Length: 66
Image 1 (cartoon, rainbow, N blue to C red):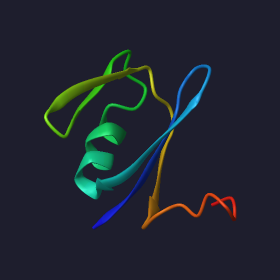
Image 2 (image 1 turned 180 degrees about the vertical axis):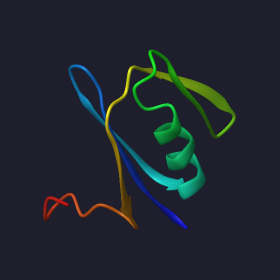
Image 3 (image 1 turned 135 degrees about the vertical axis):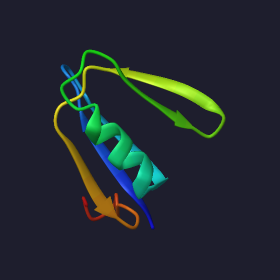
Image 4 (image 1 turned 90 degrees about the vertical axis):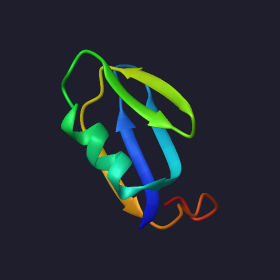
């Protein structure tokens, strides 16, 4: 199942679209840690401190707002 992971960081919100639910679960397990890392594609990405993390199944309709 694919969807959008929504990460709340200190000064911003990050949306990661079209990711597997397993990636979301991996990020959520690291929620509250100083360094949140996950592999997207073939690249290791460090998001820094992330808290909280939400999941939105399917795609986000940006024209509608969610």
